[in-house]
Length: 143
Length: 119
Image 1 (cartoon, helix red, strand yellow):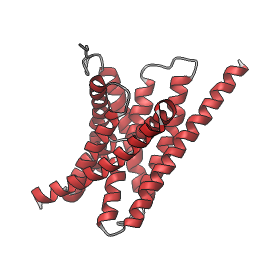
Image 2 (tube, rainbow over the protein chains, first blue to last red; image 1 turned 45 degrees about the horizontal axis):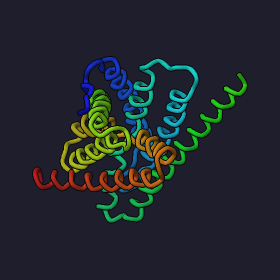
Image 3 (cartoon, rainbow over the protein chains, first blue to last red; image 1 turned 45 degrees about the vertical axis):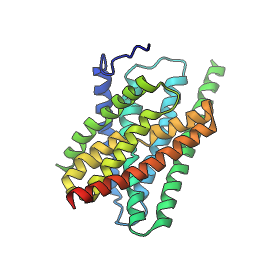
């Protein structure tokens, strides 16, 4: 028999932090879309860049928060990673943009977008996480 | 006004992702990122539907705001990296394949339902 922890109990502060971060992240994504709008059937560069930048930053933030020697404030991860970066990056716009390109008879562009975002995002998170880990290690050695 | 719609949608979407992730993991454990997969696929279906049939202000509230904050690429990529480093490359590849395959299928399904129900 397993005992399940209630999903909502004691989560008020975390939910508020995630919500506030999500608002900031989504606002930044919406602002980027207003500054660099994507024309119909054009390659969705803005969403690709937003997602790639968000993946690089989460690589830094999560490694710094979970592998550093100092214990961070418990609301920092929900606010920064789950909230801001989760709200900033988007998977739904990625999939629906690709679906629209496919629907409009642009399979080459759709595949390039699907594969290009994936590779850029994974390279960004891997590079950022590795670099942050190296910096943390260097600091530990120096101390 | 447009910005306010995005804000309200995101204020609900982001915690909905967090709580869904918790609920999914309390049932299936932490071996595979099923929680992120769940919110991403649901968000793709809803955004597919909205993009097909919803007016602009509804798309801002529920699309850019709610679906945008409900779904996440950053957590998806970080969890894929973690799988590759701690579990196996096969698990990481499975996460990528399932997320992209099910996400696209859900976007099509959402658009199809939208057209079928609302024309």
